[in-house]
Length: 260
Image (cartoon, rainbow, N blue to C red; front, side, top):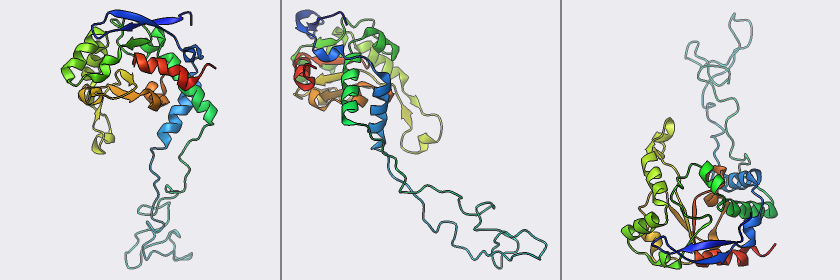
């Protein structure tokens, strides 16, 4: 990356200073490593599922053997010719049902997770990568986008909206609002009826009211810089989320990721 510094903007969208780019932004962008890290994080939210070991076996069905001019599948006693128990029959048990012992958690080395996080942070400074995710960035004045710490103290949703308009990220929030739709498929019956796009991420050092103020702004996530993870920076395994850094959070990146 050719840049060595980035502008700091106030809540009116005016440049009020400059800050040196932390060395973490020189990390090569590694979509492959980011994908492995995000999948590993997601896998820890999966719930193990299995089946009752007696499912489909609570029956009187028994095979009569050979010599009766009929197939040898187990049949229910007193039930005429109705088959049961055997996996290959209508009404039989499942052949290979899910088992709770299946290993569903993905693990990756700690150093690889660290590389993925550094790479995801670096991707937020690339205008091309952010645009390729589908974010609306026509009005965003600079990448990475840094604003004054005053944004952390906003306590009204209208103040957050005004600040987002001034720094050029509100069109992306509008895109998220327009993207809301009913999910196609059975998921709509299972507690995930609606789908919507992912909007901007605001990285802060301390919550002074902005988390509550932005709670109703669609698509916006707020996280402290100490709690950053790869999935927030690269939702759906795709790096380059539109990210707003507070100046204090931006300066803390050197301490978190060091100079190497």
